[in-house]
Image 1: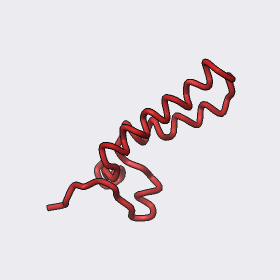
Image 2: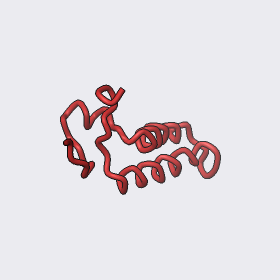
Image 3: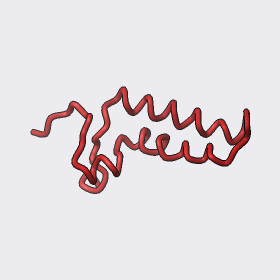
Length: 68
């Protein structure tokens, strides 16, 4: 499973993604109540998983872990 979803996000980035995702998701229930808030699921899920599919596709990693 680690090859399919490698950890490629730094912990700070993960936290920011989760907060941003929750903020966008709140738009569905409060405020303008727009369906665009469902887009917040993407950063929320990638932040919780610690793996971004686009980062994997382009070979990017902001994670400071070293492979040994």
